[in-house]
Amino acid sequence: MDPVQGRELYRIGDLLLDGASKTLYREGKVVPLAYRSAQLLLELARNYPNVVRRIDLIESVWPREDVTDQALSQRVSVLRKEIGDTSDKPKYIGRQWGWGYYLLPPVERLAEEPPRAEGPAAPVAPGSRLGPYEILDALGSGGMGEVYRARDTRLGREVAVKVLPAEYSQDPDRLRRFEREAQAAAATNHPNILVLYDIGTQDGAPYIVTELLEGETLRKALERGPLPPARAVELGLQIARGLAAAHEKGVIHRDLQPENLFLTKEGPVKILDFGLARLRAPEMAPPAEEGKSPAPITSTQEGRVLGTPGYMSPEQLRGQPADARSDLFALGCVLHEMVSGRRPFVGATPADEAAAILKESPPAMQEEGGAVPTALELIIRRCLEKDPAERFQSARDLAFDLETFSSAAQAGVTPVVASHRPAHRIRGSWFPRCALSWPSSRWACHSFTA
Image (cartoon, rainbow, N blue to C red; front, side, top):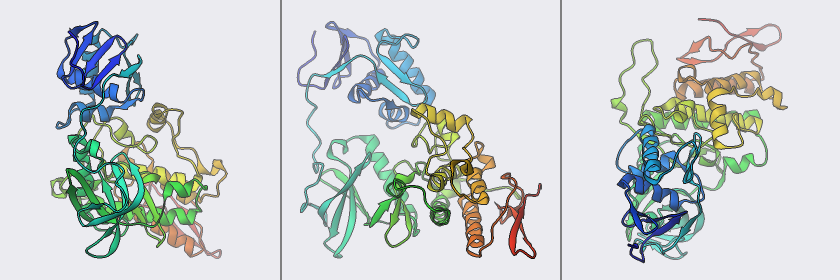
């Protein structure tokens, strides 16, 4: 029998998938398919011809559950068996190693989508209102929503409003991530973190209201070339302080990158987009033993991979729990890019980038033609250690070292460091032990093995 017309139908090679009933047909006959297999196949069909990230597939197939990456691999194997596919000679499901899956045969949409959810259309028209906020114009968009400049009619101030698009307003996963961003922003109060003003819902579409920023993203600034080391250190110090405030509230960003860092005209850099952040009550972290670093604020279920290729820590790529030190790895990538003009780990594909992060050492910035102070390079390389235990153990430690470096530079002294390996800790942090060398009035910095 043929599926009922008017539903969400996809022809996938010789297969026909009814998205509404999660039924699969081949030559008019039903192909037995488990519900989660059907959901997985539907998500691949909806995103054809793109590669669908593993984390997006996990959150689509198991929207209300925390499962491991291994569960997805097992489900793909089951689906292949159900539709007569194999991993060694695939006909239907292709795999991009370390990234995700995609459909190999051509996919054709045969029916229009079901009626969209009630709510504001995207984009929201200028002059319309979301609660007390009058929309003025569009500012941009991202995976988690559309952003608009608006005016708060009660207080007479301009604000930024992020609206979850109407077509996603009934998607439990996107709603959960949207709410998570609002919770993460509300949990922190720091001059280097975007300020949250309000959260609301209009005709079924949720929105959050934040301060309106004037300036540009760090990505836009880097398109003009690398930054002077002093400026990079200034920004890195502010970012580290903002992360420290978030980490103390139990919030791990987990997607720090130049696109999520905003350089305001007033001066402060702002950390944006906590859409991938995970929350865990700080009091749930076990107390640190005497003489040891505080326990990490673990917040990711093992096996789940979240983040942006090129800025993800090794443990994130492996699907292992991510803690505050994962954010410091990402900040190390950002610092490297600010002073050298390129990311420390690059590749032709996301899989190549992941392999570089897992196996390769970052290139020496001095070899890339930049006048990067050795001490600064060693701080950055400490952030980029593969083993989290070898990195800075907190954002405050990193901020302290950046501040120490900045103070030395402003005083006109030059740290000279022979090795990047940590040796001397000050206030639980790392910075090469420095002694004033007379009569040159220059800082001679030496590493000591504890």
